[in-house]
Length: 75
Image (cartoon, rainbow, N blue to C red; front, side, top):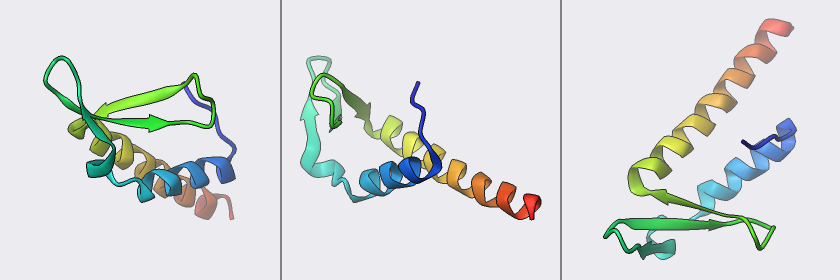
């Protein structure tokens, strides 16, 4: 579980948008190509299959969209 302030979340999402999946994929022992997403903490890295990566990115886009909806409702 990750917790972000809004600006941090938006920066993280922008960072992941710039990641070139093809350049960061590696074959894993189970035969699956996975991306390794390194974090500023050397001890924490995330791995995603292609489908997981797309779902992860889509979930972040939906979260930003919902944030905009809530901001409009609060006005």
